[in-house]
Length: 394
Picture 1: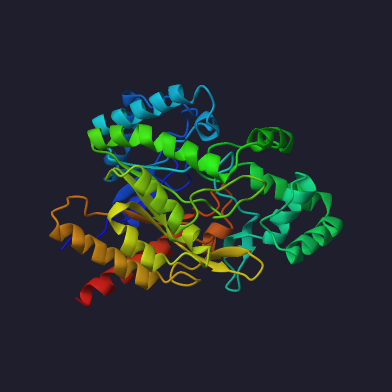
Picture 2: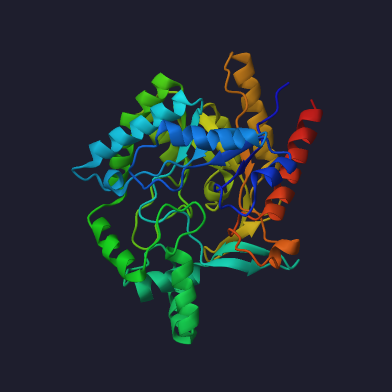
């Protein structure tokens, strides 16, 4: 009986968590990207092979690309988008030629995943990533001059109070945290640059961004299908509009619409339990049951929601995510694939966003927030035990 492929995100040679250390975690697959290649450029075969060979020399496998960034011209539907789509298609072909068959991507405008605090202190002394709705609203309204329409009146009032009380240092730190770029983010900006770029979305609403997404996937999914690559779109993080930017991969309906619009097996999902789980209206276990045949990659993490819309990264088996129910449903989906003769049985998953804990808290070298070694090691051990325990029941 196969198990899921356990993978680990690695940010390349500069990652403080080395491939040798990753092998000691028990993970067998690597999730990485060629981060040094500018957005919109073709990934050359020689550079793909160089990275793949380095991973294999460490006794591991390059299982998933995360991510090939989607150029802003594609997201905005600009006149030159087709040239960037053609380059994206070529990168997919080159990856397939090198034996890499799963590509994760996202369609979030300008910013990738967003947090307001990279070291939120938990009761046990470890730190977690946190999205504070009050501070996010303060940034959107007070720094960007936007409406903050995603936030409640109570949050708006608290945001005004925060803006009045916050020091310049606190305001500067908030700005840096939000727009300077988190691990894996595609871009980083100054506040002035970000304001200018935001104007490009003044005339783009959710329906238009959805149309741009579907156009893009309609061009790349047939290529992926032809060369044997599985596409996995990552949901929005957080899964609601922020800073006046639309978000269009936030709900089960968003995902289902994309899968139905381009109904090819290659067009699939990265099922991120943390991102989808921030919304209480997303039934995660049900999503696996209903959309499971198109899940190509899984991010397993849990968040703890708060009444005002804030959330933080919880322990992998805690928070508001029914991780046992999700794992059970994923196992059931794998069994369906076995029965129908599918070969994509590994369904790679990785422990996403671990806490900073133990001696990672005091290491002098730079660490990647959310991607420290020990917190993810704990997460992977817990998830592995959960999977094995559920399988042992049958």
